[in-house]
Image 1 (cartoon, rainbow, N blue to C red):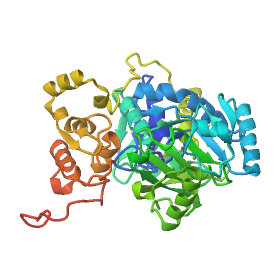
Image 2 (tube, rainbow, N blue to C red):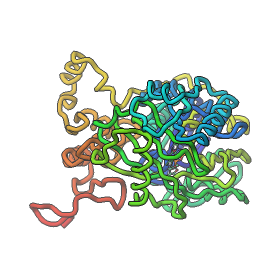
Image 3 (cartoon, rainbow, N blue to C red):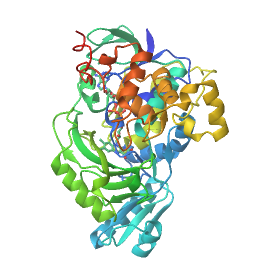
Length: 479
Ligand SMILES: Cc1cc2nc3c(=O)[nH]c(=O)nc-3n(C[C@H](O)[C@H](O)[C@H](O)COP(=O)(O)OP(=O)(O)OC[C@H]3O[C@@H](n4cnc5c(N)ncnc54)[C@H](O)[C@@H]3O)c2cc1C
């Protein structure tokens, strides 16, 4: 019997698990996929928004500003890449300039510090490559960028290091309320817990309906992106937005924490909560809008594309409810990543208010070694480590210069990677210019060796994503 069962290992579930691991509690996170951060938390713009966008008085505004203030410390404790690069909202005409003024006013009311309205001349001093049509901008100096899946992985890993359990491949299909407990089951397994947190992202409304008669629902709004080669990564330092529309913040151009350039997202309402295909129409939209904002974008330098799904709620705001030992975090669309540390803290408070025992875990360690720690070492430190563990001296991914030692760490430290994409999200091997063309066979070999699965059975991203179909020598797979 667990004290708390958390459904979903995105940023909300993982940071809540970490928050609860500060206390002596038996907690478990139930995740339907085979890894952490497999939903919206792996595919978004990765911006820690300053907090000027959401309407004053909304939960989005409150948790965004608070979360953004908390994020630098959380990222530093968890060793997650975070850069306070500032953001700009470009204006292309007088109407846009009025919107910029409105956003400035809203930001001030929301308590955002470091906001400035810039003329074109001032804007060019901040970002010399801004497009010729821009006439001014809002500058938010507290805006930042982060590695979003890195945050979820590190938070879950830290929670596990501090005693929390993670059960992957556990799609919660049913929840029943028993005598003083909840019974949560997948097709194969059942878990009992006194308290339940629903952090199931886009699917949180469906889980909620199993427990409550609720009108709250979410639908997916797709956002497509291009990732550009690092050669384009220094075109801008800040995150460059355009003025927002009713559907979102428009197409942005932003450096990533790893030195690439990100273009996107589109905003298209769809019905299928699993449709993350990219489209020709999306690509055309991104190209034209991004090139208007920033000069020098070379579309031949695109190295990959992806799409993520916003969990758009029917109330227009985050829906965070607490009743009967059950907390639901629903409709956590943008700025949910920015808000996530504050939402996690709030969820823990709601649980304690409902009677969850609050006894400090004296052994709680908030710190986790950065995933890219090897790169941060001096030459002498690297040499000493290579002597101790020679695998750190063998480069496996040439584009991103990732060593065998780092891949072994990804396969052995909490939460362990199980497939190629899991290793990629933890180490960046396969995220460079060749997109895994060179390193995939070696990474596959390491996964097979360390996880004890057959080479032929290693997958790209969970069940049904086999990459090896036939042996070139020695017959057909599993023959
Ligand atoms: C295009 C786009 C751009 C965005 N840009 C930003 C941004 O720049 N800044 C920002 O602050 N926010 C941004 N967001 C929003 C942000 O990404 C989300 O608010 C955040 O990731 C939500 O996290 P979550 O944990 O609620 O959901 P998720 O990350 O989706 O996690 C939910 C988890 O629950 C699991 N799950 C679902 N059903 C079940 C079940 N039945 N049983 C077990 N597990 C289950 C899923 O597999 C998933 O792992 C963006 C979102 C999108 C789509």
